[in-house]
Length: 512
Image (cartoon, rainbow, N blue to C red; front, top):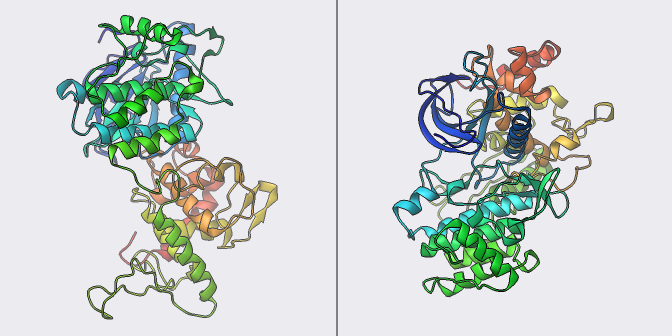
């Protein structure tokens, strides 16, 4: 590993409970290794080392800005087409000055990269479907007002099931109106001509979302034809051709092997000026059609259908609970004889999820469906229906109309509006504006489940006490304060004790 800023880490090195294994990749701003651990989930991850503790002051300022940018994006966005961040660590090892102070991102581990796939198998059969997933990832970023800034095959990772994830957000930038600002670094083959010699200001280079669209056009041409759309045998020659194309003295040289529908897509991505370029939402629709993967509605644009069903169930339950009626939660409209194979069992909200949540201890029937399903939506085993119910009891005594203006907290889960904004949407996107109370339980309870699911893996593995109580304390303060205190901070011990009491009360015998 000889590239600038690459971080050599010996096999077997330990950081934060993780052991460094095989090297995965390296680049100008850091190095990635496989990590293994045995004391928690996930057991395998990718450890990205970013050297923020040593170097010249100018280098440090630059690298810290990149790290903060990447962590901010990971923490703010949770999407199915973006590699997930599990944790952030800082190396404390004065005896190794080359590692001391380095930031380590603990990331979801991929199976391989698109670059490796293309090297082994040019023009892969899965290319169109992968392009649709890559475009979906770009749409998720752009809708959240971020620009990737460095889309290329090496920054597209492929999971064990073959699906694509966008990764490496060193160059990502949050939009400020129509522009964002990124460092003066890019990969020439994927950089639009208007940025090749763009002016560099104090905040870096101005970039628009259209830069990602250009990069996608180049990537699509490469995936489908194994060639670049501009002539030249080297990146420098192709860079010069891109500049000549922007001036009108050079033309695109799209491969004759590019299918007609993809040819039109690539042309609309690779326009001479950014103003002519297609935007990502119509691009995604066309790409999905060309790839044969079109679906409606897209999960990142609307709530999941099951969530809509649950909201309807909740509303019906609320209307009927006072009359003592059960309701039927039908998953399908299949016809069949009562009690036969096609019949769907009726589920009364008073008994819904009885194996995980006591039915005789005062959890309001109207909220049971959302409590149980909000826990089920999280893969973290410690985020249970009993935990969510215990926290709702401790936070508001299940009062959907709670209003505490002095602390800016409202509703059944005591949400602060500016925090709820980041957790209220089922697709992981922040709300466009800060919501205003009142906050209905159908919104507050699933948001609580999503927030708890985000908190759980960020708590240190070795903290003493009931993991669920620690998660609850982190909801009331922050996971960082719980980690720093080595457990529930003193200020929140009464709250933790109440949650623990209700946890015991609401957990069925033999459950957790």
